Length: 171
Length: 207
Image 1 (cartoon, each protein chain N blue to C red):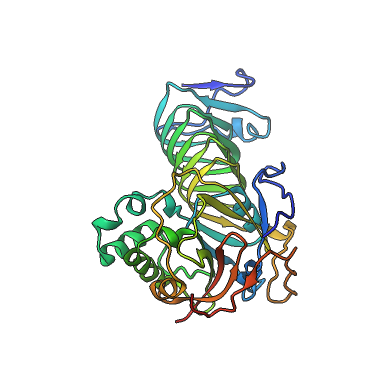
Image 2 (image 1 turned 90 degrees about the vertical axis):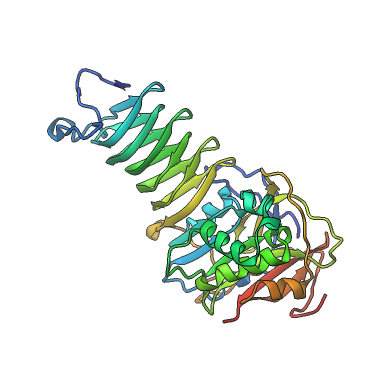
């Protein structure tokens, strides 16, 4: 059911479907070694997927996906109705479900997502369709530019060719 | 509003969306404390610039794209105010207990009939707190045409706009008094007349 994109001989166990256990000892570093499993366009998985390899989904998946230390890539033809836990998630296809991204979630211009996203970094490309909530905690690396209460508000840029109506006012 | 900067898009490339400076946008952030999460409701579609902007902060964005909803586009005459309020509550999909700090209306109120606008105001009420602020566009003169655009935040003092992916909806411009009355507990705090006849609005919760 799963094709291997790299090094087929080293790791026979792919992320498991329909409740099968994954031999962790053989695959603990699989994601780090760049091993990737593929759910092809003709495959429909109905069940939970867990493991430690990266996963590309071009087919259909319904259930839950838990690849906490790995990457999940939903390809353009991929249709996923599942909650996803992964290090990085990229969506080119369709996703209905919540995403817990440990590092980064990207929705590309062909991606369609309905659900809630939690991640330190979330990126949308122009054309991406998203409905739901995005919970972001970027940590201390983020560069803030908001004129928050303790700071002096940024002065507006060039004067618009307009005038203050002095609200509240009647039209 | 003038074109001012060329911001980076979500992937780091130059955004193609025109950027406009905004006089009132900075006021949205006046009451936000730096040490707490910002809760934002965006009634428009998800745009890269807004997500990128709030990605710099501990924040929660609720993006509901009411512009695409059939309820708004085709069915406003089919439901009374109470039914519209219930429908908006469902479409907003806000978790119980959510308190919105910033509400981004863009030009959405101009596409709602009065009873729908009142219904939206009522649907939002449970999620407002005394510090809630909103931003949107209306028109000073109800004969002013409105372009079919989607908006995003590029900087605390700059917006971007691009053609909407949705067809233009029926347009129901409201006077400022009507708008303020219909939105219930969100009152127009300040307005800024733009060169094209639109009015940029800063709204403030009055609870």
